[in-house]
Length: 152
Image 1: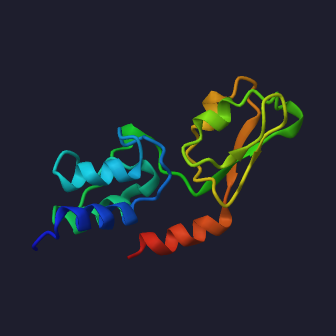
Image 2: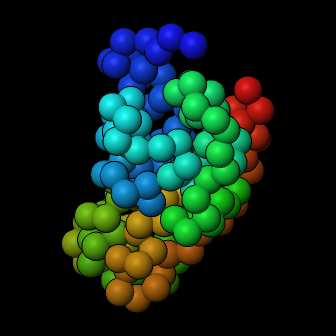
């Protein structure tokens, strides 16, 4: 299998990644990880959110042997979104700063909220919260889309 030009390959790899921007792969987001794979600096097994189907799809595009995702990097979970427990939020803005996709809105000393359609479920806001007022909940509409994408 002939590999496409590197820019095209990066784009195609990036489209296969789940876009959580979680950093579990060791890179600052999905696009940098796609670039590392295209340059041969990283393998397709580094993305827990993509799970085994994602690792197989990436390997197929790279023309390498199919591999399972590296479980040491994290757990593969169903699609989820962050939810701020309103009564406990102190408005510190630490979750806003931690969110890689700007899915959290609010102001200093005011309650924050998560914009569901933008939340990737990366969980980076959870440890940033000093009062533990962020919980992760299932995102059923995304689970359906993720299931569909992982089968091709």
